[in-house]
Length: 172
Image 1 (cartoon, rainbow, N blue to C red):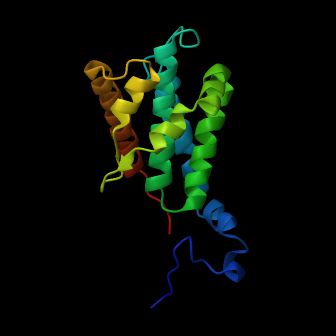
Image 2 (tube, helix red, strand yellow):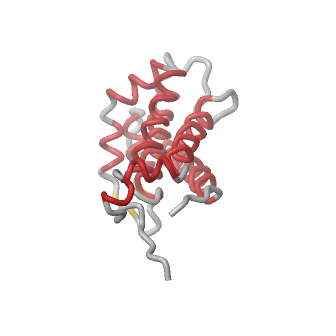
């Protein structure tokens, strides 16, 4: 029976580095594709975060920050290992920087990202309370419609990301 290794347990002497192993088996290429696809789903015309005037629209910019948080957490939670997750996250944020530097800077500077991280995680990897944080971030605290909107935006993009990942076959 052949010995099988997970990507996190590949002996150094076998491949040189875990990164080289992930590159050689095609997983890093898949991770880059996922990061690019997540960014494309946000920024393409008709995408989740496509807004012609998003730079000047406070709420649109904060929706985009919510989507960036969602993509980052999905990648961190559902990728097979930290090497693949980091690679996909880097490609996601690099693609945002290349295509919309203003959005990238907003995400990088926003405290909202950290506020979302304080939400409690459920057993299926979803964050609970995102809508409440979103309502506060867009300066509409205690507004039930803003909370509902934040929860719905998060859920829709989370579901998109999960469905996309389910279709990817990683090598082990």
